[in-house]
Image (cartoon, rainbow, N blue to C red; front, side):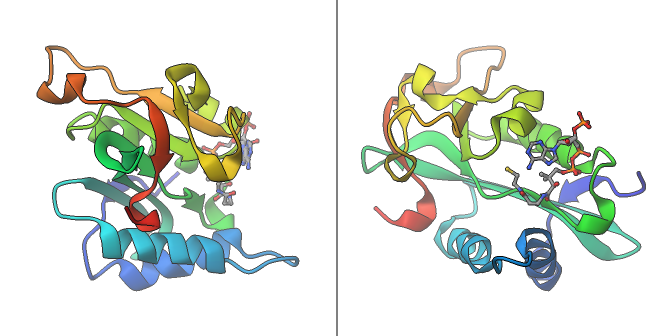
Length: 180
Ligand SMILES: CC(C)(COP(=O)(O)OP(=O)(O)OC[C@H]1O[C@@H](n2cnc3c(N)ncnc32)[C@H](O)[C@@H]1OP(=O)(O)O)[C@@H](O)C(=O)NCCC(=O)NCCS
């Protein structure tokens, strides 16, 4: 594996990010418009302090992308961050890059004022980095249906007692791009 995760630079990486999202999610049956809309929506909704965005590049070309931004619980800002669809270019899949990107995202997330990461995805892939069904933490995502096995969460443990630990994290989650 030659590509390693780094923090994304804006706006320099934007075109490369949109290209890799399109490349990874497009197939014979569907385009990648839904995932591209989520990335663009997150870019539009986030603020400077409440997101993490990572890319990996190979010879100057973006080949992987991960993005997380603080969302809401029951409509109010909360220390629960939603991860946008993670992707690796088909040319670079199966080499450990997706797993490395998720590990780096979790590590960066621990430095943010967040208690939990959530996402909608394949339990067998995200389980590799510690995600388990979010329902067990009392977090639900209405579009997925209550207690969906695909809506996953990872509690972000740290040493010490961060100020945000008492903030509510249980309830119905919404991503930043879904509005208030
Ligand atoms: C899913 C994705 C991010 C994985 O990235 P990657 O760099 O290929 O993954 P890694 O090399 O780190 O890990 C590969 C492992 O993940 C598994 N895996 C890959 N895609 C998977 C998927 N969609 N569901 C479950 N497991 C998956 C592989 O079987 C492999 O398992 P193994 O090591 O036991 O053989 C990448 O394949 C991708 O971008 N896919 C298209 C976009 C997508 O579906 N993203 C969301 C995933 S829910």
